[in-house]
Length: 432
Image (cartoon, rainbow, N blue to C red):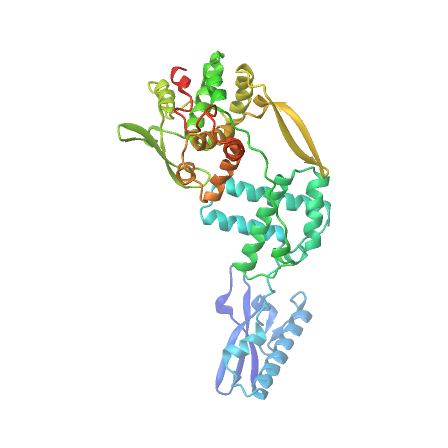
């Protein structure tokens, strides 16, 4: 094999520098490629095929050319010894060795969580769902910074790490049982995705990762409470708050859905009006019959030039107004509340109006519908629940059922007990 070097003056650049090429002839084949070295023609010795002394750093440059010669010869012998016929492409690797590709760095636990949220975003998950997963991810970040103070990888999330995380949430930050449940449920779903869909190895057994929900009492209003709310004299500023809240009590709509109601959601059925919409939270379509009380509220705002059917304030303003409204309506019955503080159950008593929120309307609609004889299966469709079990939680809330069952078993039927199937939820609202 013969190795030579030439200066390609025909490729001189604008700076007057020409590239130095190496040429290797072997077995009737020829390799010609650049050495990535350049110089002015005056600095190149054509006879000796090397750089002249006039080139700054000529010694290092010539040593590099000598090393290329040795590498080409070594490569040729290596291929021959391995029984491989040398080719220009194989010999070129001696001049321009393939850069070793470093394996990709292992993603951190938080990076994997970010990737998971992007997967959910691509699958079309709702904004609020993504926000919940973002909250869980941020709590993991807070714990990582406070606990380990080092980068945490998937294998580091062991049962011991999980227990420390729960300790951090409960004792360091005072989160309640259901707040912790929401975070851990999302973390567990994320880990299950990595294991089942990405084939990654976890640092713990998911079956041993305990995540429990604590059943908390849901506050709802009675028919008498609704009548009181509809009849009480209130300032003009609270009228829209009352109307929207009562409308939700008669339809079971969430705040996110009533906020976006528009004329296109109104349809006619059997001489009456119904609502058809896709729920913001679950993306499930629902169809809701509008009672006379609900229609009266819509008619009240029918002639106003609004893009929405009802004047809905921001949720915080609505909730503040509801507490004031409940106080004016005399909803002052003491209600026991319970929370877990440092592992201790703490019970307090607050007036009923303090517990009023926009979501109370949804609980009220469910319980009042059951009391009026609506079957759980029908209520499930109206409320947009994916599982009947979710709807049945409201049936457990209606204590009238259990009281009447015990009364019938122990005392027999009485004429003093009013039937559970009644008429309109709140006829007084039609006059509001």
